[in-house]
Length: 183
Image 1 (spheres, one colour):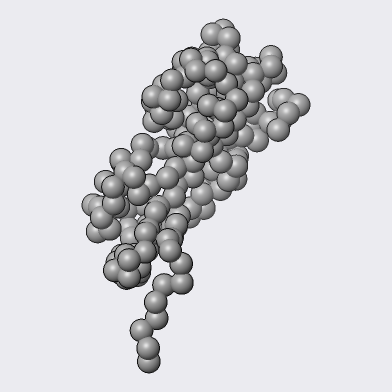
Image 2 (cartoon, rainbow, N blue to C red):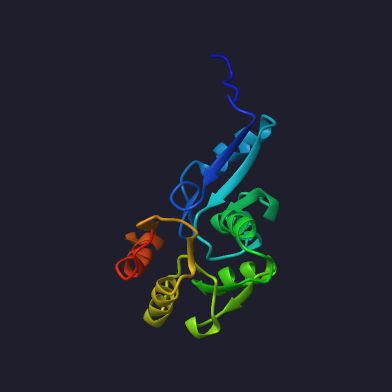
């Protein structure tokens, strides 16, 4: 049989549940990525979780046997930052409700990250956090009620884990959503 060539110039692979699950590669992922790269096609990896900076995702891929550079990874925080940059002036006060990585990426993009409704944020940015504190969700709800724009890095209700399907950011968004009159 003739050797099958890739049909596209580039490929984008989701990470969780497609390339790896927890600390385990999905069977065949390494070989498929190597085959695609060997044919001259670009491979990019996508994460809709803002848990880590791009460099950390690239390091994890490399550790698991798929070489990757930070430029090979796109995460949902990058898309959120583009929206914020289009909508808000540089230095705007933003209430970050998520991980430290979300806060660092917002600060790195020139926004002033605040921790409370009392800091008068003009926007709330929610990103998935596996250890979200209830008071953070309350602060988000109150800030949105008082007019702050509301952004989310992704709406996924669930996410895959090595133990099974667990709540995702969409579930955390739903907590805030029942307290506000905007989506």
